[in-house]
Length: 366
Image (cartoon, helix red, strand yellow):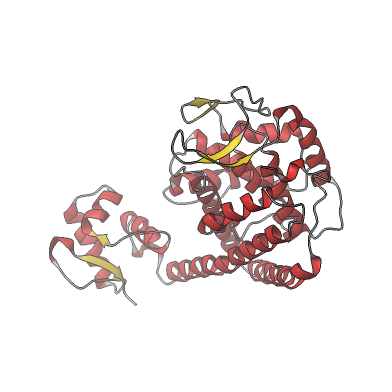
């Protein structure tokens, strides 16, 4: 099987500008419209929207790799580093802090050049213990392939399906030098297309033992930040890639086994970005709705338990709210939970769903 890095003119990517022109124009228009909408908001709401976006980005970029992070810990870690005060902050662990540090470095220092040392720092942030799960890996340096070639595989042991085999570790340093020089150089390429090219190029080199996908998405965020012209993020490419995960891996494998004409890859990348931008409108709507809700009521309307649960209902609450869930979330008795809920019913904020008994559930009164 021949891969694109084995082509004679490797890294001299080609694409059909005319084919992509309309789609790229739509993406750029929506980017500008979103940024314009956000810039009209006050400082607090812009900070809250960015916090929600980055929380989503961190949670989803790790979920793509099969890791599930606690969103509240991610949010707290981000808030602490961004200097944003939030209620009910929780302690995060070093794995969460590491990916948060990586992402913020990529975004807030998007104007700084990439280098081997910067990549190594990112890699250290992802694997602070020097291990990926139970396996010891090379951290803060490029892979050496001592245990065999770097392959992307699926399937049961003994019946593996090799989707991709990366270049030999002997040439990784040379490949990364070429990649870094290209990233840092000024080009006439639209910066959004540059982000798409960089994503594919980095994953094709696959320079590290592990963490290549997360770093590729960080590079994408860095270049999209430069394309937007602001240091705030109001949409999550990683969240959209997770939604389109199957298609993502199909087009990635096809592109890495194809020619250096990457029009199809860039078309998929632009459509994924377009969908991410559209989804961000929902996130912005949710932030505005939450802000409107809290401004309806005086400061002393709710106790701390009620504020905690209402925040969850307004954010990312899954399933139905019951008195037992309330008691568990707020660490109170079921009787106290029922009193809190009844108080919100009396205020016209919650209502009982149909049914009754111990399984009675509650939703916002609309």
